Length: 353
View (cartoon, one colour):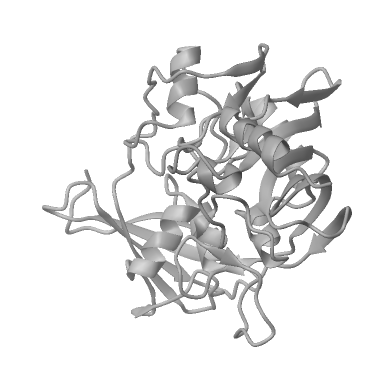
């Protein structure tokens, strides 16, 4: 621990100089002051700080900015701010959290495994990775237990081995990297959109077109946290991201449709928002306009509890190039038992003529 009454110049270059000062009675909380010597055009504050202040993630930096723990010239700022000559950036840096994800004996349905890669059939009700290392009950915890060791993390220690994510209640095939090389090679395939993903789902209503492409940008919901939307023409200017989904009708029933969905981009909640946007929300997806249905609702008799209390969406198939052998691979996961049961009921009681 350094002397709290002395600020130590740790580094200086043509861009800035940095001072660090430990705070008495605050544990490992540290004050960092950065004086910008020249303008940094095109460099966002959050990205700049990620490179200049070690052992702190960009996500944490963005959170600190929102909390007002990072100021520029004594005033609150935004993550997108571009530092200018003469600026003084003041940070209150919290102690680093433990980075090791603990293993937990959570069953995994393994579809494929070799020395480099693991593919599982994810079940509903479990998230992919913890929001912080102390959180448990995730796929990441299960995989650490299965392998008996920690996994590749990339830039985020809370996401060991996680290459891509599925929503908490979306089931199906999911890839996990066992080493850094697999992680960055497969991540690059996802970034370049060369990975082909195919989902199946039950949506409400009878989809008219046999197949189509939904090209509608997504944005964070303007008023509801952790939800997304396709902005309308009257929506105030907000940040949007391109989102493209191709769909194909597999089978129509009275009041429902079994569809195949092929996302061309990988935005959060993309398939759910897009299907709701065209008037056909996923069965059970009450977040985006769907409804809960019981066996009695579908057949006229039987139990009245919901058959599925979340989105009826399953990641059925994924096609990619193996990051080490460079062979093309195609893996699929059997459709969730709940979704299959719904489809069986629809085929028996709601088949269209």
